[in-house]
Amino acid sequence: MVESGRNARSFIVALIGAAVAGGFCAGTSAQTAPSHFADPSWPKPLPNHWKLGGITGLAVDGDDNIWVLHRPHDLSDMELLAELTPPLSECCVRPPSLIHFDQAGNVLGSFDAIPGHGMDVDEEGFVYVGQDTVRKYDPRTGAVVAAVARTPEREGGGQVGLPPPAERIPGKGTLRHAEVFMPGTPDAPAEVAARAAAARMFREKYPPETPMIVGGIEEIRVVDADSEIYVADNYLGGRVLVFDLQTLEFKRGWGAYGKPLSEISTDDADHAYSPNGPMAQDFVGHLTLNISDDGLVYAADRRGNRIHVTTKQGDFLKEFVLAPGTGNGGSAGGVAFSPDPEQRFLYISDRMNNKIWFLNRESGEVIGHLGSMGENGGQFFGLHMIAVDANGNIYTGEVDAFRVQRFVPADSPKGALLRRLTEMR
View 1 (tube, rainbow, N blue to C red):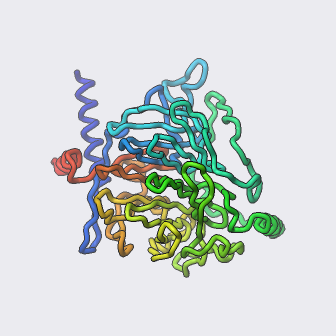
View 2: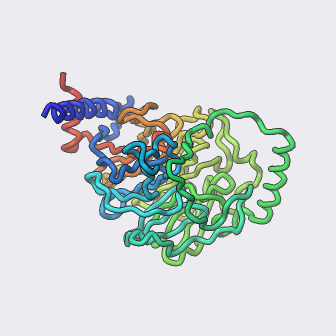
View 3: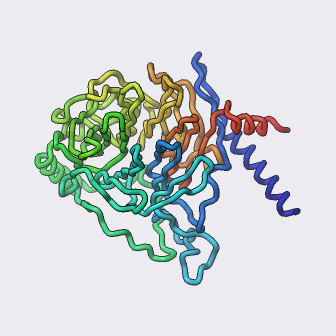
């Protein structure tokens, strides 16, 4: 009984801390964004001594359950001691790369696809995963049932096609972290020139209007009502591509400012952005997207610190600039919408500043934010993915802290409880 009481008190302390960290503080705007609190009860502890790797995809399905795509091989050797024979610790074991959670945070199911980037689920329950292309998976068997066409080679080389599953050497991980955003030693001029020459040859062979996947996938969004799937291909800084959901055949696509694919520049200088500088004429890099209920496409150019709004046909409407002084990885990450019928707010995940930005969806005005850099509940380290369910719960995935979190609306029953806990003395 003593141990049980200690655990209960520890849980309440954690709950209060998470609520304080997750509380939203609105800005000075007359319009107020929804307030949220971090929910430390979600998800439940994973079964089988599993431990997540970096989160690279999130989706809420038609039943309001949550799919998480992660990289199991990100873990360090020290985190995989339970894989050894005999085990040296109770924890941990690499889970399958796709895990399905219910609203209570329990694991409903899982399967082991090749890890990738970006995912979504259609109304029939099929799961689409971004890898070197988009692959459609049957979640009951984990089998690939279809794939979007892609070029037989990649710019700069690298794997094309579905590789065999990576060998899981018991107790051996890779621990990938955020060093990719740290300043590095400049390459030798000869190496830079050689890469530029190879890129020119590749881009002549595969021009911007190539009607298939050329680069890698950053995000996937299914629109069941139109029987279409929107894909952010990272070739040439990013291309919005639309495919038929049933046949996976190419239908249309566009670049920054809604320009036709054929007008996307193959000159890297046109895709360059410096903090607080002028906006690039083409997408800069790490393009994600989402589609609102009223038929607008929001394409977030993370390294360009902006969101472009177009129609579903690619007609450009407006540009929202977000935290333009952000360098390296950029500010405009994943895109989600508030759950009200008008979807008045955009929720944008920001990996570099480690916060969720709340924007007025009509004007693009920043009306508040949630979170900060850190590893406590309600903070973020490598905020990467974002999704919202029908009840307004926000789900986040971190690629460096290796976790998913849920933030509940302050006016929900659990939000009211968390608020009361923060007010306790």
